[in-house]
Image (cartoon, rainbow, N blue to C red; front, side, top):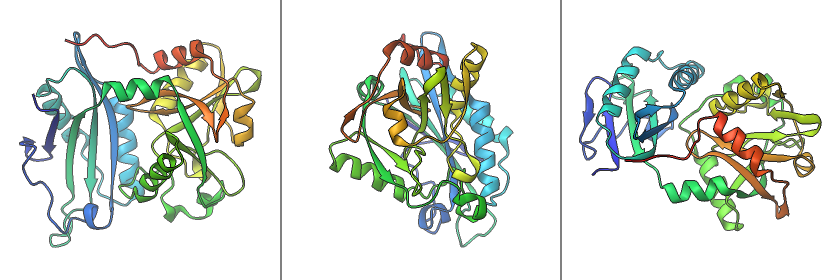
Length: 292
C-alpha cells in the first residue's frame, strides 16, 4: 500500500512517480507560491479532512497576498475529494495543497497540485507528549509588518528556507523545536506552529497576527473559539518568553502534529497541565484513533 498520493489540478490523481513540475517553475526556482496543509484521518468511520473550509480560506488569502491568481476553490474541493476517495492508508496523514506562479516559459499558467502523505504515528505521539524548545531571534521587531506589507506577513509562502534552518538549529542544540522571538523581545511562533499560552487570570491567549507577521493558525483559532464558547477568557496578546515560564502552560500547535506542550524552554522546565492539554487537544479534534 502506497503511503503517498499525488494529484494535479486539471489532471486528477497521478502516479506518484509522474513528473508534475517543469524545471523552471517559479515555485521551485524562487519559492514563488503558497501552500496550505490539512490533517486527514482515516479510521473506522471513514476518511475526513479536518477544518477544510478554514484551510481553503487561508490558502486563498495567501494567494492574494502573493498576487497569485485566485484559486478556484471548487476545483480544489473536487481534487481533494478525488484524492481522499483514493486514499486507503489508515491513521493520520498530511494533505498539502500547493499553488505556484508556474513555469517561466509559459507565463500566466499557475501550477496547482496536492500531496497526501501518511505521517509517522510514533513521531506524532512523541511530539504530543511534549517538546523541548529553544528560542531563536527572528531578526525583526514585533510590528515590522505594519510598515512593510511586501514582507508577506501572514502568507503561507513556499519560501521556507529560514524555517528549515531553524529546525536544524534546534536539533543541533539538542532540542525538538523552536520558538521565534522578535528583536523587541516578544514570543512569536514556531517555524511550523502557532503558540498558545494559558496565561494568568485564566486567560488562554495566542499571538496576534497583522503587524507581527504571524501566520493565522487554523488549529489555534478552533481552540480559541471552543474555549470562548466554554466560558474561558480567550484572545490575543503579545507575551515575552519569561511570561511563558510563569504561565499555567504553553503549547506549539499545528494542523498535523496537534497540540504539543512545551516541557522545556531554553533548558528550563515549563509548567504542564496534562488535563488541560487533553481538553485543548480534544477541542481541535485530536482524539485517540480507531484504525482499521
